[in-house]
Structures are given as structure tokens and as C-alpha cells.
Length: 202
Image 1 (tube, rainbow, N blue to C red):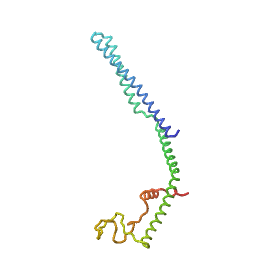
Image 2: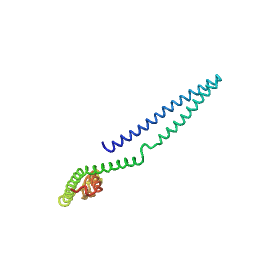
Image 3: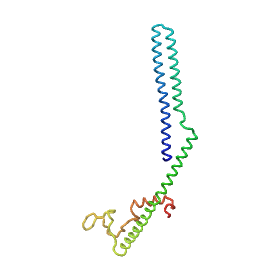
Image 4: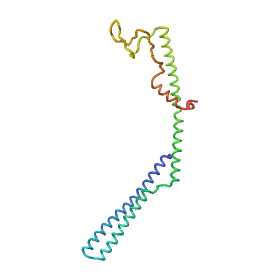
């Protein structure tokens, strides 16, 4: 069982303990309230009968029940405010949870090293192919045949046919800005740059 699971179980047990104590007091409060109502009814009956002894006895019961209600209410509040555990014990549990988080972090970092290295290798191979392809495109346009298409970036009107086309009358580079790969590769590279270099060292 992990520190987290143990702490969650302890937390549940402490909550249940407090809930049980409050429920017990609530039960006693309900009983005292019923006793108070019964005593008030006896006082009313004694008043009708003009029976001083019964009135006095009922008044004593009513007063005792009222005091019990007041006392139990105070005790209920005390339990609600009472610390479920000492500060020292609480600090120890918090320290255990923080240590557990640190261990989780170390385990996570260790687990992602291999996949990250795989991704770094994939990016390196991908970028080499992109660079070679871009270089070939550049040489092709310079030495074999220039490119006239803008691939929809800019549209022109053909003076002879009047049709709209993306073909320029002058050579244009295939890529207006240097192409370094797809957006996903760019995002991956940006992410990788934020990681410690040691993660990619064998």
C-alpha cells in the first residue's frame, strides 16, 4: 500500500470517527429535546390541575433537559472544532506525502528518458531527410529547372487567357521561407529544448 493510499485511509477513518461522535451527541440532543417537550407538557397539565408538586417536578425535568441541550450543543461545537490529529503528526504525514511526490517525480523522469531518446532520434533522422530534400530542391531549381508555381500563396492573371493562376511569370522559390519540417516536429523540438541535456545522454 502506498503512502497516498495509507493517508487516504487514515483520513477516512478520522472523518468517520468524528462523524460517529457528532451523531452520538445529536442523538442525545434529540433525546433531551424530547424530555424537555414532555416536561413542558407535564408543567401545563400540573398548571391546569393546580398541582404544585407535579409542577415543581416537571419544572426540574424541563430545566435539566434545557441544561443538557445547552451542554450537548457546546460539546457538538467542540468536536467540530477539535483537531483530528496533533500538529506534529499532521506535519509528519504531510512530509511523507511530499516525499512520495518527489519519488513519483523521479520515477516519472526515469520512465520518460527512453521514449524521449527515441523521439530525439526520430527527429534527427527526419531533419536530416528534410535538409537533404530542401537542398535537392534548391539545387534542382538552380541547375535543372526553376519553379514558377506559388502553390496558391499568390495568384496571378494570365495576360493571354485571362485566367487566374498561381503561376508566376518569373521564377519563385518553392519555399518562400526556409522549411524545417512539419508543425509537429517544430513543437517537439521546442519541447525538447526545454529539457535538461542530460536526459538525452546515454
